[in-house]
Image 1 (cartoon, rainbow, N blue to C red):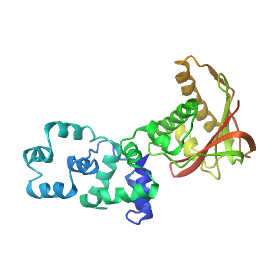
Image 2: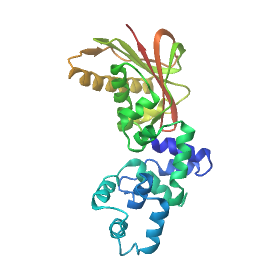
Image 3: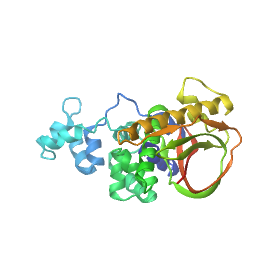
Image 4: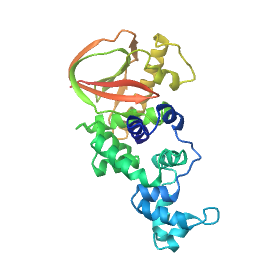
Length: 290
């Protein structure tokens, strides 16, 4: 989630171009973040200390981690901890930015501090984003009191990241009592919980889901594309139903519905979750019934 959020911040600050950001994401699976990069991001070493050590070693012959232990900068235990982060998505993304020469090791934390201030994140929240603690990340953007709705949002976002866009991210959720939807698909959940789940977007933005959920591709958001979005919602709800069943909570789902003409909906409890995936802006709307 943080890769796009931090990348967007760098684009806004004209540090990074949009085209290069799109090229760098998602990060390569075989890329590994370097020890010095992780150490600086996690504030285990200062950038000055890391650069001083890099200036003293021959990277073709010496490993930074081993040299840092010999120099007294790191313990064996701390190096082992650092190595567990080499496949962390954000560490890899920052490494790709360093490899591209977008900025230097000494600038990482100043940009991170600016990103934190711009987003209004506290230290715990920025740590959750960096370390991809999905449950805590979702709490930042979707501060729901209901544990069932929190669990639903986690299931929704996890499924989007797994099947649609691994770098999908959220904006601040909000409540509404009435809402005009754009093109949409939806499904009603019944049983021990009663809720209607909509996914809606203007223009052709629902192709962000329709073109990636299966191998089908569409020229525009038509009824076939919306049927595919409806099947995606059905997939999310099926996973959610399975999760609830472990707590002896039973739900069922009606058949998905969809239309190119969005309805005007009105309810005391409408929860709107803005989601950005594959360069598109969509809204998940949870219409909760008592």
